[in-house]
Length: 81
Image (tube, rainbow, N blue to C red; front, side, top):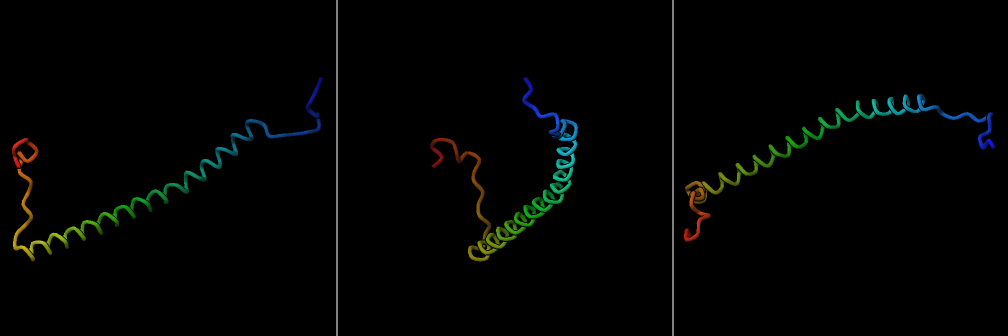
């Protein structure tokens, strides 16, 4: 009992694995510049946030004449209210 037509041909496992390897290499080479681009965008966003924080802090110093006071070391202990 044969269900496969002997005239039909398909891909062998070796051919399929070579195609998958080539696709993997293409995706891998495209992912490296994309990752670098995301890293650069995160760097720029962080730099912008720090510049904004600096401006807000300087505005606070100009309006109050002092820096914000730090939290004391015992602020989380009971009775320090």
